[in-house]
Image 1 (tube, rainbow, N blue to C red):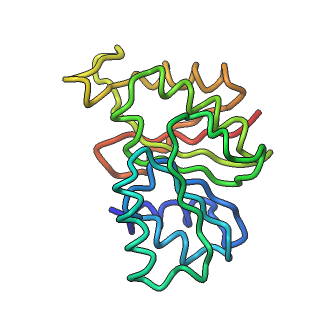
Image 2 (cartoon, rainbow, N blue to C red; image 1 turned 180 degrees about the vertical axis):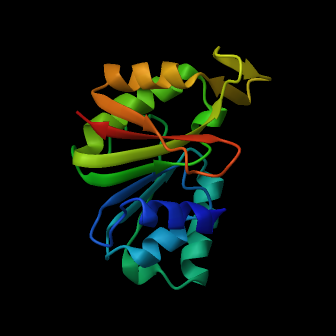
Amino acid sequence: LGERQFRYLVDHGLRTDHRMLEIGCGNLRAGWRFIEYLEVGAYTGVDISPDILVAAGTTLTERGLHPKQPRLLLVEDMGFPGLPDALFDVVHAHSVFSHSPVGVVEAAFAGVRRVIAAGGIFDFTYNESADGRYWGALREDWFYPTGMLVAMAQRHGFSAVPMPDWVHPQAKLRLRPL
């Protein structure tokens, strides 16, 4: 899956000179590929779990990626207060919003809008609601109508388009700052 995420972004515009933010970087399943591909200092991964960031550090060591100077940051606030404005060309979140209620997604859209550069892209996956309504299952999985996410994106100054060639059980949207 990490390879698929990496290949998809490269095939859809990720360049070696881009600066990238990965939300929910986890243990760097896809992240190590991005780090390896991007220029030195161009990757920032954020996660809410200190333990998973320790695992990410182990991945960096095992793959010899410390010379690429990636940043791994613990975040508690989707406003990303420790990150500068308009820094990132590409923002990526895989399987984050499928586990996030609408308030978290809304905060992430606002935070990403602040840290994304003009002309940047924000790709994310989500559980698409088959019945057209927003709902959560056991407070772990959240389902969104695409139209709801598109309207939310527009409220935060993004255009949004579905990425129908993404082959995965979750749907994918691409946002661009207006």
